[in-house]
Image (tube, rainbow, N blue to C red; front, side, top):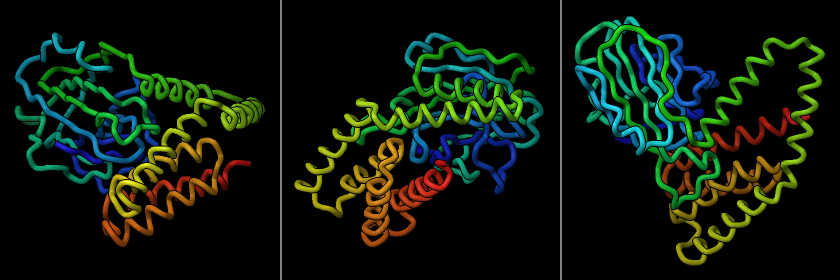
Length: 281
């Protein structure tokens, strides 16, 4: 089924919570984190659709399919009181054909989360495969997390971000200031990273082709506009990022509707660009 990712995660939830807060730590394994009665499963995309499959079992899932996935991590969910269900990032239920995970009723469960196609994260071209997840679940007493496979770049970035945040929490105020200066210097270097510039140039060429073949109002054209917002902001090309966001919002609201995913995602991206501009110094 299709599940909506927001702030780079979707949920497996015991109790549907209307107050889900963004910015949940990614956890040390870079794929799944159990916190506050929620299981956070982390995607490569910031917002968008991903494919999720469910395998509800009475006993542990076999390991013979691990090689088909990029990352595979197993975690425990203790003291489930209601029903574990896969949810969109905001706590809403996705397609009704996804079964609940806790067929055996309340108790302790084991979840094995599989992921592939999370790379290239925010810079995903429109023709790239959609992210896929498989969640196997069976009754089992609590146990330590097991990382069977950790190979994708997105997971490595999440693990590094978690370690940096944990290290930051242990720092003195003076050390935090020094780290902020270092991060600003690294960000300035990104502006001149030829790989980032090349990726943007390739997407701009695809956009020009789509404009010529499909026209400015075609959904694929709008998707290409939106795919340029984050890479341009990453390179601090703020005006261009804002221009692409406004094009998607204006045309998307009129042609696709104000509640369409492309329109909403562009609004979210524009808000993030403005936030980053305001916090840059």
